[in-house]
Image (cartoon, rainbow, N blue to C red; front, side, top):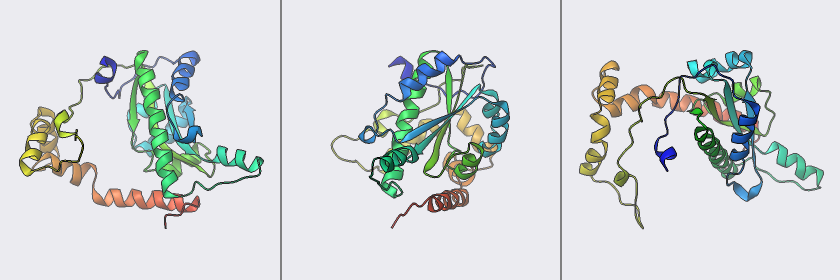
Amino acid sequence: MELLKSHRSIRKYKSDAIDNCVLDEILESGIRASNTGNMQLYSIIVTKSAEKKVLLAPLHFNQSMVIDAPLLLTICFDFNRFSLWCRQNDTQTNFSNLLWLLNGTIDSSILAQNICVAAENIGLGICYLGTTLYNAAEISKILKIPEGVIPIITLTVGYPEEIPALTDRLPIESIIHFEEYHDYSNEEILKNYNGKENLESSMKFVAENGKENLAQVYTEVRYKSTDNIYFSHKLMGMLIEEGFKFD
């Protein structure tokens, strides 16, 4: 419990290499994760090469940890391997639809979280890169990912150079609903977000971006609708090329 409660995203890493036996341990822990039908419709691409990291860095918005971390793990929804096995056994199936895109994303996410907990348990640090879906097609080219394999999540992994403070979280009573969903009153929303809004770091964030409040920073700077739509169209284009059907 203490390990889970003390999670921090690590963005600065030591240059120390990670032994192959340590890597094997965390990856084997990862694949023990629950998954749909025990089909394990995922693959993990391990990147150690400095040259590959340089190529991948712009696709992850040039975050320095992509270069500095000794390991990048790109976790993919992979129905290519399972489909090849099915064809060899005179049967076939179709995973190119919305349901299986969601199943594959969920399974890849559970796998990733198992890897993260295993890594942190032995003193490594990790950080999730949400940029993977933004540039999945370009990442696929660099990593020579075939049709039927979709990059979902990338993790940076390494020994922490520094241990940052815990990131704030909303109070638990604002997250949990018992028996039925309880919708929020205006007063409850104000109460739930008051702590986050009044953090010194949040107020600095608002000032630096010239906004009136933290919500505006999220919606008008960090996750703008124009950006969301642009990257959604990019991802949709890749999925359509892969044969996905959403009707």
